[in-house]
Figure 1 (cartoon, rainbow, N blue to C red):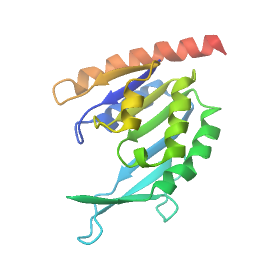
Figure 2: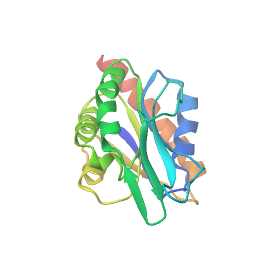
Figure 3: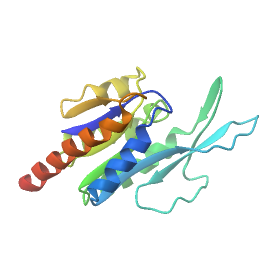
Length: 178
């Protein structure tokens, strides 16, 4: 089973995931989508895609989008190019991190297929998932191997312990199976 942290933007999904990851201390693989604070009026705030465990170098190869109020310019090919690396990295991991899955990823068919294949596997996943209704996000949230943890301002501190205990149990099961 995989832990999907579902909640609105800014509620603390990534913070919760960081806390759980630190406490688990496992060999990780995955991707992190990071929206920069800086924003230009013309383009918006850049969003970069990083491989878990790799240096966070910003460049055109990992620039996934520009987001601004009222619109976005996305580059789905960045996610599609990262899919084979994600699959390759996941083979050696004890925990797969997908932070975060949202509308940008939904436009990348190769990436979407790769995420769903990973959810079919036995390696535990922790993912931040936006509560949007795209076909991809609906498929992720309804996946048979996923357990949803809904986060909001009132439960985010207590939820970290619950997610940690759940993933510790899933990790032990995965070790027994291998």
